[in-house]
Amino acid sequence: MSKVIKNLKQFSTSKERFEGANLLCPGCAHSIIVREVLNATDCELVVSNSTGCLEVCTAIYPYTSWDTSWIHVGFQNSSTVLSGVETAYKVLARKGRLKEGREEPKFIAFGGDGATYDIGFQFLSGTFERGHNIMYICIDNEVYANTGGQRSSSTPIGSSTTTSPAGTQSYGETKEKKDIVSIMAAHNAPYVAQVAPNKWKDMVKKVQRGYDTVGPVYINAMSPCTTEWKFNPKDTINIADLATDSLVYPLYEIIDGEELNITYRPKNVLPVRDYLGAQGRFKHLFKKENEHILNDYQVRVDKKWEKLQRREENSH
Ligand SMILES: Cc1ncc(C[n+]2csc(CCOP(=O)(O)OP(=O)(O)O)c2C)c(N)n1
Ligand code: SF4
Ligand SMILES: [Mg+2]
Image (cartoon, rainbow, N blue to C red; front, side, top):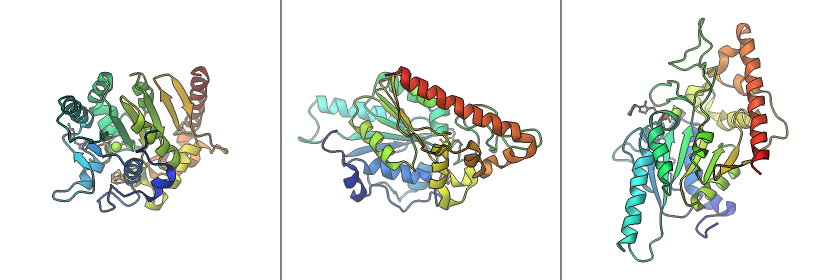
């Protein structure tokens, strides 16, 4: 760890660089994640942000919630915008045009799942292939929240969205959530990890490792969305607990595209239906005719967990 990275004790008393004054819904996990990511370092930061709830709700001209450099250009390109900034910094350093003694900033991009899994994917892939020294954080709420809750390729099976509505002819989304973590690891990125806001120590540890890593880092952060997942705003962390403890959302890391470490093993694994039943987006799955979908869900989650454990074993 470099000196500039805080330990967990310092983390709890560090200066806020993301203001509580923002227009995100009460209970929105985006703000929890961003705050933890920014508080995990004292370094100077350059942040880029794709269009989406986070950008729209935190930067309404002439106001800003960000006490850092912050850039917004488009929906699809927070990764490439940041890779340009990082390259410009390198060139200025090479030409000796940076102030003497100036520390190298950390470069962080935030994008929603729509911006990451779908529309910005080729930009993200190019950034990782070129090997820029940036950390990309996907705030994954499994839906295009800012534009009214359309499905993305991160939307899980059975979720009712405005473009995959549940009804008499449909049980909602029919396709598997894209395995973005494996895809990013396949770029041979030095560090890729999945995090959740309820396991904040695990999240901060991984983010700090990301800050200390040379090369592109990808972090997939589960971000429960009170509006589109349809739960009470006070339950954000409870929902995240249900996701990690039912293994619907396992926490792990992949180092150099190969070594896989599971970083959280629940003592009591909860049934998947406990997680699904706590959210309005899955309400229809509890109708009698959809019983088989619930059963399949559990089987799929179990299989994925077994596969993850095998991958971990084989990678050591
Ligand atoms: C190229 C482009 N396509 C579509 C849009 C419209 N748009 C703005 S935000 C958004 C949804 C963002 O979804 P996501 O990335 O998942 O972030 P969230 O709002 O869910 O946090 C869309 C479709 C746009 N701004 N630019
Ligand atoms: S719609 Fe969802 S992601 Fe957007 S601000 Fe509200 S809770 Fe957050
Ligand atoms: Mg989203």
